[in-house]
Length: 379
Image 1 (cartoon, rainbow, N blue to C red):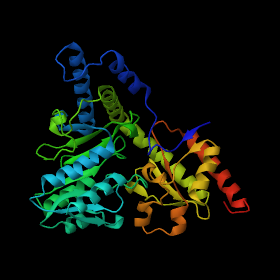
Image 2: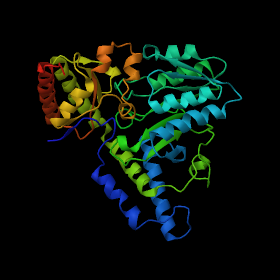
Image 3: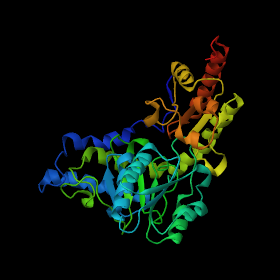
Image 4: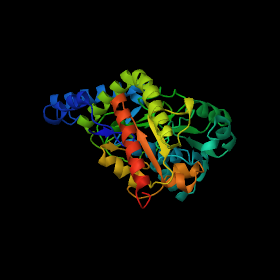
């Protein structure tokens, strides 16, 4: 039995999404920029996909810019917005717990002469963000849901507070782990990024919601596609899949949220009962789909592979960092001890996760932790 609890890294492609994509590989394969029938069919698929994503975001279709994924969407938002406002100021505010792509974009801005203020997780409140705004601040970038702990940040309230402090800044949020689980923020958030493969869509797809009047400098120039913000022929089959996945995510969001309250809490309580230490926040500050827990005395990677042998798939940190063998910068920013850092696993659920799978996973965790603790080396 395979119990997949690494859905924050990627989700399984939905069958209905695959069915929606297939005709655009072999039958409706025209370039959406062509004027003949095949081009018109491809263009119609693209238009429909944009409408589906816009509806899921409560945005207008013309506010949706397609990208190759969440990384490109976040990078376009951050670099594009900061560079477009360079004459207004050179200060940017972000957090210490952002995804690696946001951190790298901030490093790029610093190399270009921008000043970057990174707030610790305990200070990601509307008041603290507003207090960090200066006369030179042109961008605030704070994620909606943390990809390692599942912590929910009040991005709408943060946006309102930041804009009350300065009218000239833009607000961006990485919504990759929030999309399909939480309602999207309103127009207070100027730039909101999502990824297709986190919501049972195809890899290599994403979108950036760019609210009206928000100016960006493009990263990729070319044939004027995506309102001139991303040049190049659109990958129609994949974007049709993104649209179908976004529509499904919106339709199932309420039911998924209810399921997460039950299953996420069951996993949390079960791990605590087994001696695990929960690193994710409690209550309404937790999305429920991502649970981070430490198992003191055990090496995270050793436990991960022991669980894999039992058919349970999880992760140590984010997929971007785990291959590099690094400990979590998110948990480090939270001030956790070295023991908790090196023994932490991330469990992440999807709308396909069942209560039986949670129960079976807890049984496997109990067996694996007991076996490793009983081993002569201590795991």
